[in-house]
Image (cartoon, rainbow, N blue to C red):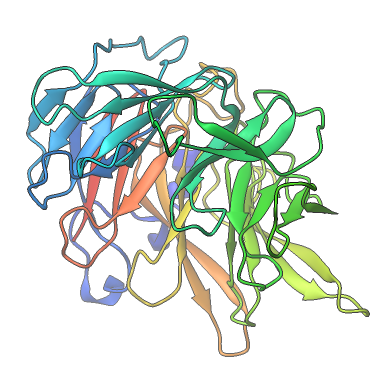
Length: 395
């Protein structure tokens, strides 16, 4: 199915390698596999030795930039089988949690399990492990500034409430502080889909979930829940993103429909008769039976956005979460693609997407990181999954 679709159009080319002049607007990448083994479902970046070079972290290892050939082990991790089960490391997030000037690593495991952070030892000695939070629910937690205080928070749901956790200011080695923003609902630990973005244009970050968005109040004191605006963005896929795709000065929403099946969409923000916010769904990629895109693949468990070709518009980066349910998902045995959907927009706001296959033997895990790793002004792709630890450098 997928192999047939890859042959239909020259647009669906593998962009690992050189491009002709006529394809100069397409991103081009070189692939480096840092490990073959399965350590984690995601990877992140930081500067762990303070040499002003970006390093990569995946599972128990960090790889020193700029060539990423030197591997350092900061905790006693293990290799997991890539044909069954799961790693105990789903997400890695990087920040200086104790204020000593060195980047540390926050590790989020299987949904519903505790999160811990590892204190940079500033050497090759094992890093000290600190308990952070008792259970991170949702399969797409985020680590960014939702509160507006300039510091990133761990955004997730916990014990049936949406909210965010952040380090204890007096003692970051203690349990992180939990701030709920919603009433309790029946969200289970394996809920798919979550995001943060300013939907109503008031300059404050709102909380996005598959069934709607929660509006952050002005000067919120924590005493009342944020206002919920019900809307079905998706049954539940991956990261949910707020971005002005059509250029009309309000944020639209991008999300995969299912983390283990098919579907990628964007929701155009519109206004009702009374000025209320509404959305209209547009398909980016459908199912093998019916799709506006010639390329179709399943298991979109990680979705990120960045300007991948330097044209000023954010593009969508996603792919197949390889062996996400150990072969039980629809299309699980199709090639493990990593794909950039290049965004185009006409002067009158008509939006379209061109799928570019970056690779067909890697895919994604639950987390992909988009970052200019080698400081050349181009956005690179870092991923970790059951096919190893992978770096795609933009050329």
